[in-house]
Structure formats: structure tokens, C-alpha cells
Image (cartoon, rainbow, N blue to C red; front, side, top):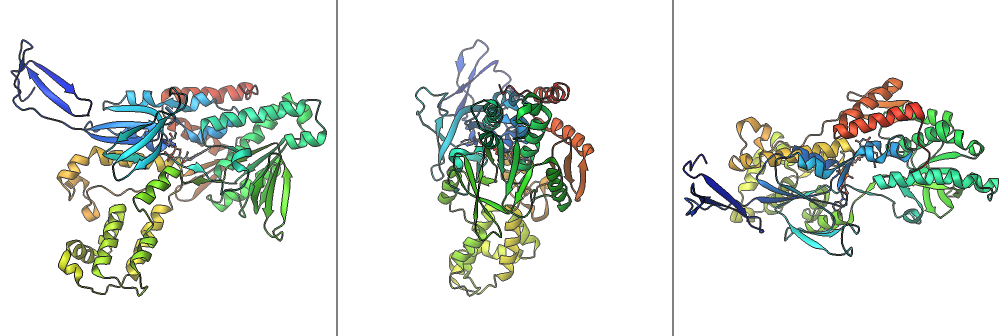
Length: 533
Ligand code: FAD
């Protein structure tokens, strides 16, 4: 309109191929030859997953020059830090989820959503293969293919079973909202079952033996929640069950909560001991059958101990999604050490310019931080030389000492790999990526970086930097351990109130905030609901 003020009407026709044509009409609505017929082709951004990374990407993205398609088997975002509270009815499942459509509805950019799971990524042809959720498709198997220009993989991780026999068949996981609901149902079913007159006391003991495998933050928080649920609510309703209930926490290493400060670990172990939660350290689970769990206890000459159980919750960390494994193989994603191993064939510690250049190119493309790092480390000359080196120059085999270079790279590599698998990291990565997209055009126009984005190394985007805001470990009985930046540790009721305030503020919408706070209030007044519905 600014360019053609005489044209009163304007029609925008979108084609199904994604192109967008602007056609012009005069004041009577009659079509006229356009002064310029432009095709504005939006780049397609496909986002896989509606978890922490995917959702924070969508929330932060505000560049309208992309056509964004979101694909995820669940049509909501779940606030995972409150999943352990859902397992015992402290908080209702509905209170911690927000429909993804209501998140994207607030955005003024083109975002569409498909409830489906991606089962294959074709990296070379830039396609993702998807299948709808069986419930949302007619016969559960119409597959479809989506093209992309940019692919955001935010599919999260899978529970890691370490291929332990019987785990998938007999254990509960705690990863999704459905898992938490399933656990809640199973706990209450166990109490109902143990109350039936048909069982012996021995059987009742087994049914009411709850085993948690994994002493990380999730396993510990679940064990603490379960302990509170049993002691504050269930034993009042099932008084006869009191003498039979037992909670066991199995941990393969020497301590629980290894990622926390030693003071927190020690406090948690002591508190669990006081609470009667049996923490078995150095116990590696080797097999799970339908009624027994077998462990190898360290220092016991490899002897296998078998424990009868009623319910097991498996929480031993994350494994890579098979789709991502396959994708990484396709794009040849290996770690830096593996690349060097390949390039450093004769182990002489020297590389030809050509080999060195390939290694650098490969690494810099993958990790922009490495390029910055090298430049800061005064290796700029080498990097620049290698970047310029083409054809003839590269043929010259000169010797380069790569030891220092390898050391520097492995530092960067471990720094990147050592980011914890937390919501905090995922959310910050999603936000970082959205910011990159928001300034993509500007960065492409000014590859050296516009002045205000300039940083050391003048890369076109700032490198990702994780900012740690601290972490919590709720330990039950209104006691929480908090480890805040600067290794500031606080344990007790005050940290519990800090936990309430931080989590309430981090919830994704006012609706979920109100629901969660009212769930907490309901729990204080009436206790947890033990109907399991
Ligand atoms: P997720 O949040 O897991 O999201 C993955 C998304 O991908 C989901 O929407 C999923 O449906 C989708 N998806 C899966 N498969 C496919 C597919 N084939 N195709 C398309 N989409 C797919 N972190 C903290 O910082 N603090 C905490 O207190 C905390 N507590 C936790 C408690 C529990 C019980 C759990 C399980 C985790 C907790 N975490 C916590 C860790 C945190 O939840 C994860 O680190 C975080 O969810 C990772 O985010 P993500 O976006 O990578 O993956």
C-alpha cells in the first residue's frame, strides 16, 4: 500500500505449494496488471516435538518470514518437573499441561500443528516421514511426508533401560503424563489388592513393596512423594496395610543425587533412612521378572540378590531416540575424537593441510563455538589459512602439530556434551534457536555480524551459552534441597517455599498456574485424592 497508494484493493493468493502471490485490483475491484508480480516463498521450518525445547522455540519465534509446522505425538506441552507430584495426586495431570494450539494461537506468525510422530528423517532430501497417532487417524497407518528447509529436532529422549531383561515388560517409567497417571492408578490398585481377604501376609508384603530404580533427581523425588502419599493419606484409609508397606530405592553407584552437592546427598540419604525408605547403594539391577527384581550388589562377589516386589518404577536416565540415532548416522555426526581418529590415520600427530582443513571445516560447521574458540586462542592464522587453502595449496603436505589443537577442541567438546539433561537447558536452547531465526535475515545480509550482535570472533550468531539458575531436589515432608548458583546450598522448609514459588512462576500459562496452586491448596486442606480417577 505504501508503494502503490492508488490501488484500493489487494488480494493475496496463497498456493498450495506454499508460494504466495500478490495480485492487485483497482478501486472497482477489477483486476489490473500488477506493477510487479512477486513470489514470496516462505522457508519451511519443521519442529519435531512439543516439549521444553520445541515449545520455548515456538514461544520466542516472532519472525513472520517462516512457515512453521509443528509435529508431535502429543498436542500439549507438559510441565515435567511436576510429573512426580502427579503420580500421587498432589497435582492433577490436567493442571500441568497446556494445549499447544492455545500456545501457538497467541502468535502472529504462521504455525500449523499435526498430531503425529516422526519415524524417519531423510537428511539428504530434507523430508520427515510421519505417522498420525493411532487414535487420530482412521485406520492408524496413513503415513505422510513433510518437506523442510530447516528442521528443529526437539524430540527429547527415551528412558534408558540398558537392555536389562524384563524392564520394558514389567516396569513403569516416569517420562510422560500418561506414565504418571498409570503409576498413580497402580499405587492405589496395590493398596486395594492387598486389602482383599484372599492374600497371605507374605503376599501382601510383596504387593505393597514399591521399588524405585535410579537414585537421580526423578527417582528420589518420586520415592519422597510416594512416602508422603502413603504416610499422610493412604495409611489412614488402609490402616491394616501400614505394617506391610515398604519403599526401596536401588542405586548402582555409591550415592543418590550424584549431580548435587555432597551436603545435599548426605542430607537426602539420612532423611530417607529416618523415613524408612530403604536405600540400597551399589545395587545394579540385572533382571526384572513379573514378581521379582534381581540385583547384583557391589562387593558381593557378583552374587545376585532377588527381591519380591509389587510395583517397580524405572528411572535410570535417558537414551537416544532411534529416529535421532538414524539421523546422526545419515549426517555422519561423530564426536570430535572420532573425526580425528579417522583423519589421524598414521597416529604420527601430523596431518596434511587437506586433511586438517577437512577436519576444521567439519568441526566448525557443527560447533560454531569451536571457530570462536580457535580464533580467541590465537589460532586464527591457521584457521584463516586453511579456509583460504584451495586446490593447489592444499596439495602441499605440511606438518602441523595437532596435539594442542586436539586439547583445545576436546575442552570445547566436553563443555558442550556436559550440559545436563534438564528442562532448563532444553528451554534455553529453544529460546536461543528462536533468536537465531528471528535475526536470520539480518545475519545473512551481514555475515560478519551487524554491530550490535558483534562479539568476540564476530560470528553471525552469538554462540549458545547455558546459564545455570540452580536446581531443586524435593525430599518429601515439606523439605527441599536447593543448590543455587555459586554453590549456595539450602535445605529445609524455606527451600520448599522457594520451590513452590519458582515452579508456580515457571508454569507456562496463567491457567496452569491457577490450577496448580489450587491443587496445592486442596492437598493442604483435604489431603491427596486416593480414588485414582
Ligand atoms: P521433552 O520435553 O521430553 O519433549 C519431547 C517432545 O517430543 C514431546 O512433545 C514428545 O511428544 C515429542 N516427540 C517424541 N517422539 C517424537 C517423534 N517421534 N516425533 C515427533 N515428536 C516426538 N528438568 C529440570 O530442569 N527440572 C526438573 O525439576 C525436572 N524434573 C523432571 C521430572 C521428570 C519426571 C522428568 C521425566 C524430567 C524432569 N526434568 C526436569 C527433565 C526435563 O523434563 C527434560 O530435560 C526436558 O523435558 C527435555 O526437554 P526436550 O524438549 O528435549 O524433551
